[in-house]
Length: 315
Image 1 (cartoon, rainbow, N blue to C red):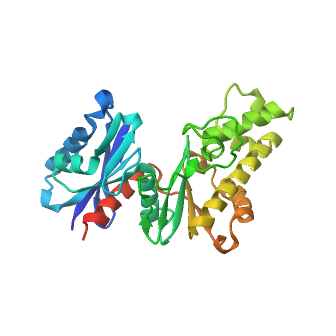
Image 2 (cartoon, one colour):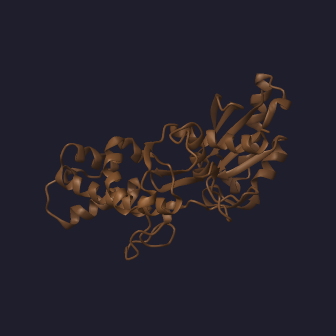
Image 3 (cartoon, rainbow, N blue to C red):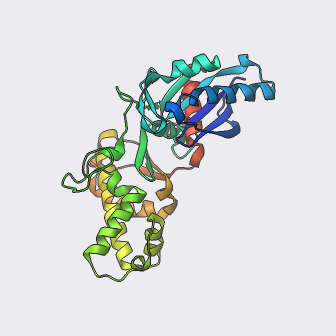
């Protein structure tokens, strides 16, 4: 039996998990992400943690097939990172660098794509060959699996689905610099933006008016309670999601769409709201798509990172 590590590198913490080659997570822990000095200490810290774990557990180096790592930025198929702003990184080959520090082969990918691979392998997309994974959090991210293979793209930025444009006439600018991106409406912050616009445009009574500040969950909770304005906001959100996913699935033609991120905690309310609009906008031949909720939570990135290593070095 061979073993390996899946590493999910975030701006605050690094999640490290130890797996056997069957994909069973045997252990996991976190270390802080030290971004000072341009993030020069991040990879040495990871290497030290991995080596320390092997030494403490008395695990022979020859049993380790390799490491996989998900990175918050574009990563090419050859392991070259193309700027990770929140880590202070520029352009360099992270796979080669981490391999030289650990002594093990390394495979790297974009964190959202890697999380998608984890859900495809051991989560909501199990048993399928073609999947669209969408994370609805502070932003909108995700990943696409086609014929069992993760879509990386030629520049490592494949499946930047949050920056598909839905409303080109949107006056506010997205964080990416464009106007009218999916992320501006379908993220948790996007739902709040829609709600504030509805509140400003009407006098409809709403529990949201009495809140000094509110988050997406408050909008869903108000909708569940029958709040008319909240239901109007959610209906617009569902329509935008349906248009977005309908267009995306018309191109990809997946078997399943898996929804994750904080907004997915709305559960069946989210799925039941989106699906009718999805079928309105999707190309008819691609309409036979299942919808599911992500099931791995914060472990998706670690699972997917290890799967990268397993596919590359598991032989």
